[in-house]
Image 1 (cartoon, rainbow, N blue to C red):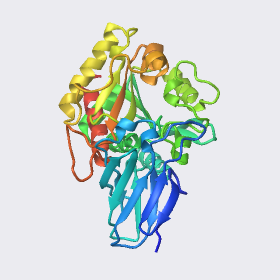
Image 2 (image 1 turned 30 degrees about the vertical axis):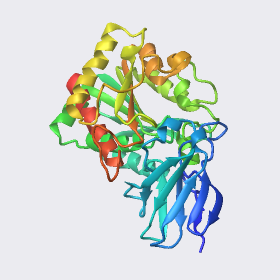
Image 3 (image 1 turned 180 degrees about the vertical axis):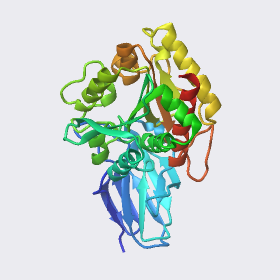
Image 4 (image 1 turned 120 degrees about the vertical axis):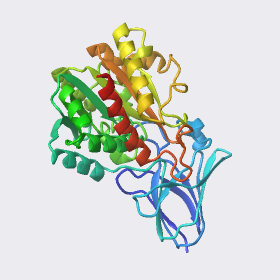
Length: 367
């Protein structure tokens, strides 16, 4: 029998080039109205116990070819537990080998996080006292939802998945929200007495639906629209309007990096326009996070000139300049972390969620 390959579901992305028996040649579809490609997520239906060979063609032409070296695809037979599987990068192709124990099996660039999970997270938080509201709508009319915990004087903002394929940001939000829901925890109560914490867990909701790596439905990289957002970046405009209404003392934009196998920060401390107080705020936070998380490190990351001429339009540059706040981009790996390795799952949903908790604990130390 021939296997069947499909991606016609929320967040799915793959195109079948050819299928023969238990082998398939595949290709990653580019983002909506844009040229980026790297994210894949698809289901294979075949015969349990039969070895599969899936070749994703021409991945050397994807947006981040350095991301394929020492990378392992994720596989799941229940859409809940995701593990690394045998993956080789050869001659510009990504070759995945796996023998399933079930007739249906899912493969993804990283453990996916669908819109139904996002909705469940929002309403779970709202059910225990968080304020849930809609601050705007996406290019295609989907709601941009915000959670608020606490009512302290400091205004803290966390943003997730400006780049929709970086699903580790949603898992980070899972951990952070679960921690903030622990209203009986004295440390959480202390944090929420000091700060009002605003979370936008899924900024690029259209890209998440379409299975894009970076682009919104209009083909824009939202993380290059923060100086003066254009009309086809309503997601950014809505968040800036909400930030104008509250003010910002601290912000973090949560991302994933394709090539660097470490957790790291890219903060406003390297921005030449940041004040000494902003730079110190970043450095104090990094020191606290080093204590809170064994996965975080400050040796490896982006160079000071990261972003080039576009740097002023990046969220973690534009927002600190606009509000005088401490701001940073958190990056997690698609590859396994070299600082906190997990041979079975690699950098995982649980690792991302644990980091979300650690980031809040570090915030409580410095705010």
